[in-house]
Amino acid sequence: MTVSPPRDGEPPVEEPQSVQPTSRPPCPRCGTPHEPNQEYCLECGLRLPVEAKGLVPGLGRAWRRQLGWYPGDWVWPSLLALLIAALAGIGAAAFVSQDQKRADYVTGTSPFGAPSSTIPPPPERTVTTPTVPLTQTGTQPTPPEQTPAPALALKEWPAGKSGWTVVLASLPTANGREFALAQARAAEHSGLQAVGIIDSSKYASLHPGYYVLFSGVYTSLDDASTAATTAHSRGYKRAYPTRITP
Image 1: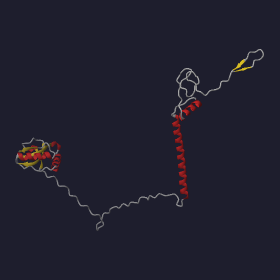
Image 2: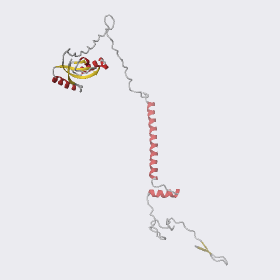
Image 3: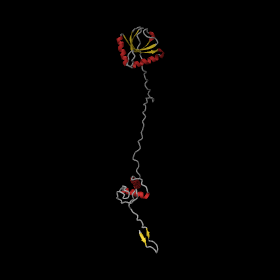
Image 4: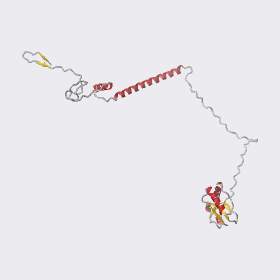
């Protein structure tokens, strides 16, 4: 503080000294300036925060001074990644453009012009239609006539004779004889021998009203039982031996 010389009859006046700005950071609690490396505030005793050193903390402090807020240290890697991506995109675009110009230049200056496709078209396929040889009279030969398959020969039960047989199925006469014949053909195709049809109303030992599908004529029960076992193996699980009496 400086004192100006007094005028006549006036007391001396002290002039306030100008406060020189300091670069020392203030205490967060009391605002007293402290040295950068000072650990405690000499005025209030608060433990002072230690300022981080390095490039990123320095950039953060500069950001705060300019904008008054700071998003965080993550912003710097993000900005660096964006910068690298932008540079890579610019480089790729320049490379593609240069490569395209080079290809156009080669095509325009080549004495052979633009390259053409080297894949040949598929060859044409010629379909040959077989021809039928003609006879001496100029007409096509007549195809041979097909001989129809021989009719099914059913086993006839001996007239007036009793014996043993294997009953494969009892088919109601209401279904018709054609149905019974179809079942007889199926039995023969399965490999059974001497398959026939009996009208049960003509035999005393059978219940009337059925076409009895049988296989074989045997003189003993043992032979008929053996044949019934064979019928079981051919798919006729309900086949059984029985005696036929006129």
